[in-house]
Length: 185
Image (cartoon, rainbow, N blue to C red; front, side):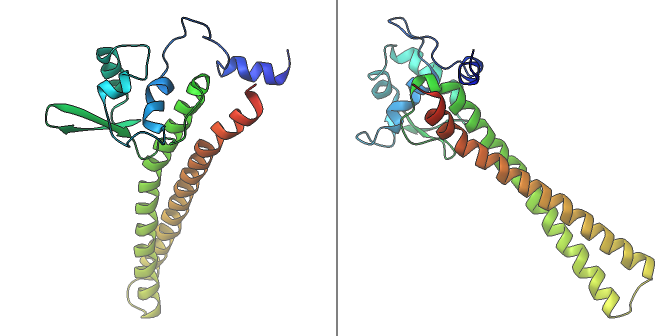
């Protein structure tokens, strides 16, 4: 078995084909990705594009709500749109596991970035206060060294978190494109 075949097997690419193909999340999301349709669609409009009914479509959308799709109410109708971090181009349904993992990576990247930015801001405060005290010769040298050490440590943690966040985001953005290019027939 070639490396390509092993990767395809691990990512479940090429499975579930035929007349009784399972409706994947990508099948459900693809109507929202089509350029010729509006950005917000009703549950019925999405169901019209699928081999499953409105109730099943609604249940699948509710499972993805807050993660891959956003819902808003228009009277008594649910209107659905892609979440901000979701891929906007139509996805081959067999790419579903890859796209779902990449969406999760991008969400995790956004969650990691915020504490990193807060840590970096804290580092700035510690360093600013420590350097100000040092220049003005106010305070004990040990307290100034402690402030500077805390500033450096918080800066390293913040930079690490922001860097990790960007790396996760980059992998989340590029993985589907690489898999599509090199592993799809």
